[in-house]
Image (cartoon, rainbow, N blue to C red; front, side, top):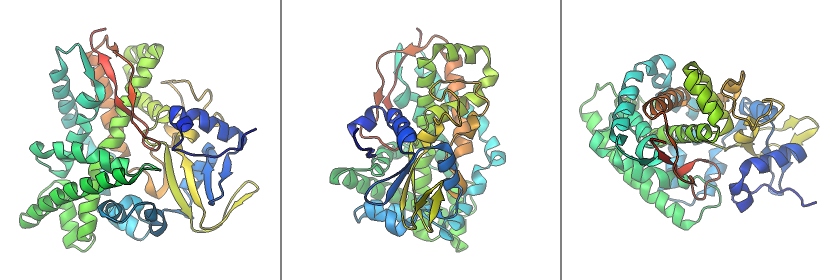
Length: 396
């Protein structure tokens, strides 16, 4: 029997990550490699670690995976790579914008934006769901929140993919160079926009609020720019994947699609099930600040942890028949697609709103849609699982 070795860059993993997760859950659910990196795949273990204060980001170690340059600097100053006290300080400056109460006011604007995009698709026989809808809607929403003029939003599309691509494991110099260029272009633009807000304070957009916090010494200038860039990227990458993965799951399961059309009240739970069965983010990473025990296994302080969010979401001990799409699943919302604990996804509520609105609106507008050809997965994706293209025939 071949010894297990987890490699998220392998052809086997990229061809069928869920088959790899099943094997590790069964044969080595608490798996160590020779470099003291541990891979966890059971729901109970992943959920417990995410909630434990001993599991931290430890940026001084994690940032070493990136070569020196703008991309490393971007990650050094954004909240995703921070530990306390910096993480709660920076996150706290924007957190109130992402509460259900604050986001409720966004719902009519999200619905209007979805309707506008769908109107542009009328008359087309086939469309690419990714490029012509699922990408554009979240970009509109997060840009609107930050107060970015509509004519400049194409910049995010150009810069986002290289920055996200740089976070994938095992990438080469060319990918990091592209990420460096994208960070420079995006932060130069946001820096100029922030300077405009400093000259004209008092605005009610999110960037204006961040500038006000900078002047109150809660945000450093570099933190302001890099976290604005982080929010732009994270604010649409996750949601685009949610919309596309969810639509693909429905089209691959026509009985559940018919069920949803007959019972539209299922949409809220359906989005949770999409997030469970095909999360936008497969893996997340932590370091142990102190020794940690799982059953009879002691993981030493300083060990690296790869937490299988997608693996946990298909753990049969938590979710019976985990590989089956069930829009009425009673505990679908217990998924870990957005992680949990201090680093739970800041935009989780926003992503849920956008996913419900986007998928419902598309299904209502095009009742006879079907796949128009094979979808294309993102090339080289290990962490951010999703599609580069999903061709749809709109009228059956």
